[in-house]
Length: 277
Image 1: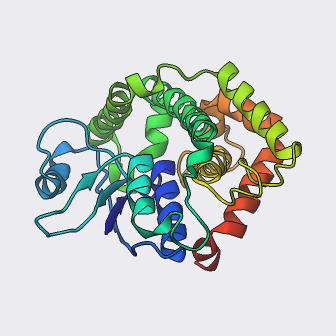
Image 2: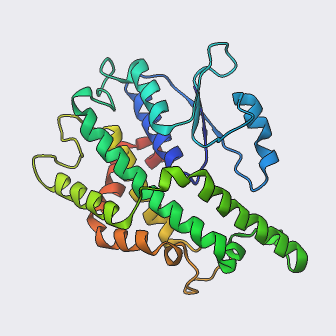
């Protein structure tokens, strides 16, 4: 298997974590290659040719089940590709059980949806800011942007990236709201604190599942990004930070420091490959 992943994507991170767990539980091993993110659509052509998709939406992560083989499948959804791998050796037949225990299917889907909605809220806020905020676009420009006409052209390209992201994920992000995310995080706090659930969302009997991976990665990635300047060129204290452009997500993470801690602990405890990296 080959996972094509984008380093800045929480969906790619959850896929990498889950595939590592599946391999540890007796499932198929995988390699990882980089997703060619760029403001220039032409740079996607080699990947489109490789996966046989010249039109339509292409997003990371992408799983090639048997690269180069006639029976290769291309799976572009993080949950779907993890399910595929889990069913081929990392599930109930492997050590540690399935990341998708069938007896918890409904509850598992609930937490994965909550994780997705939190990321949708972040993406929608950041895309809106990037489209209409020249300072945010400038902060993300590479050092060689220079000044004058060249900088103006690159700023417009960057604004175009945000605009395309907004269009690309409009349907995905339509249902996200601060209120819904707050309710989901409150429910997660209660689930982890009581009912014998221990430190895993589906309880100690289920072990680590994709529900824990999805929600922990969403929280970890957003907690990390909100503290970073939009670029290395922005000095500390300037106010031009990711947090300043995603106020709803910033408020939520500030309200749930215990979940930020839980997410970091879960990632450290249950993803040994990442901890050793």
